[in-house]
Length: 105
Image 1 (cartoon, helix red, strand yellow):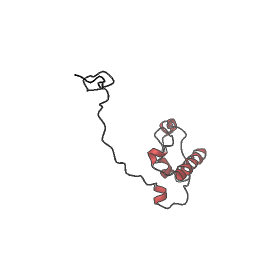
Image 2 (tube, helix red, strand yellow):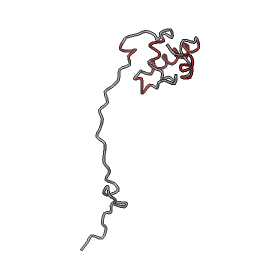
Image 3 (cartoon, rainbow, N blue to C red):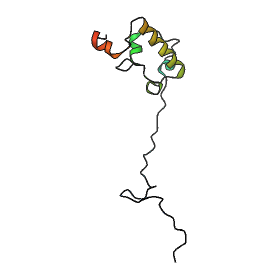
Image 4 (cartoon, rainbow, N blue to C red):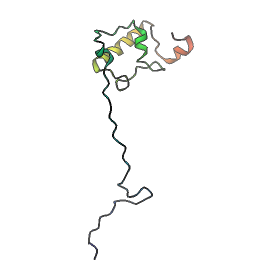
């Protein structure tokens, strides 16, 4: 005799097998990024160093997020302040449109 309570898959079975059986992605081991300003032991981020600041801007002129740049919280805050100062002093563009129209060096 069959058991009175049989286990069901909880859903329809399809070409991929039972509903609960899904393929799992292998775990990716992420290497920890080191903040480049901490690694260099730099005391401050200067708004006049536009070549350094441009590394942390997108092609549209936006400040890249911390998860993309790999900076620590302290240096990301200082970087955003330096970029905003450089924009105000017209050393960096506010938008990517400025780069296309007037040429960015």
